[in-house]
Image (cartoon, rainbow over all chains, first blue to last red; front, side, top):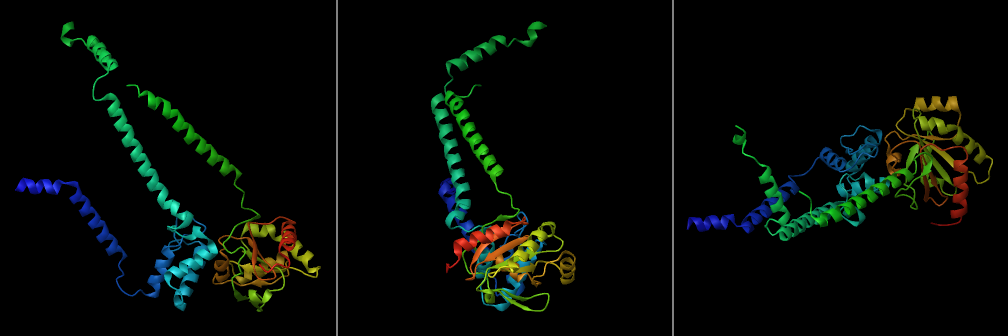
Length: 166
Length: 190
């Protein structure tokens, strides 16, 4: 009975199901709001989503560039006015600076390529490698070719016993 | 061990394709236009200019929506920025030419991350008798999506943004652009 259970546990669908469950729980936990946000929290959240227009890979939140400072001021003004949601504030900044001001590109339109392309390349490369390995295996069939045999024979002939010279 | 024949055939093809892509990228990079004095894209082009308000160094109010009826140029400026200093002569000449015309362009300096006294000193030393608009909190710069100075924006008499110029401008550049824009958009409502 124990061995049957072990077999079931070792079966891949069970592990896959557990993996999906873990990922789903992590996603729910990470996305869950823990309560009302203060204005400072909102400013931090929004500025962490915006890229500094004059630096490489820095968010407005961490950047000390004047342009980032200006954006932080604008975000603070809009949060204080309470008329826009965080998404609307990000969209407002994007409407002036363009899509490059978004630290995380949108998953719609042409920007979606940024998300899709790496996955597509990964899938294609993995499939290509799998097909190639399969073909090589099939071509060789696990049997030594004539060339292989000849090579082994040649090496065996050269391989002399070290005690011969004694 | 020698690789299979198929691999021997496909490897040069793959290397060739990768090489071609690399060369194409290099050509794109080499042909990329420099940023100085060039028109640039912006989500605001063709749209109504952001409704910005402020005051000038002289204490007058500035409201862009009240400038409708004439072409408006906004030059984002900082007195310590080298390209701003370099283009100043061209701007001065442009404004001087415009003042002699009936349908003169209204020209404004938008002070970007600079203190008022430094700007006053700069204009006293280098000339330039046009309004200098304060942007102490950066609201105007953010509304226009200005990241680096100098930048010059051109707004048509109907209040639509028609051109964004990034970097310093050379002598005659603005005259040529405004002539082109007048021909293209004069009388158009959008």
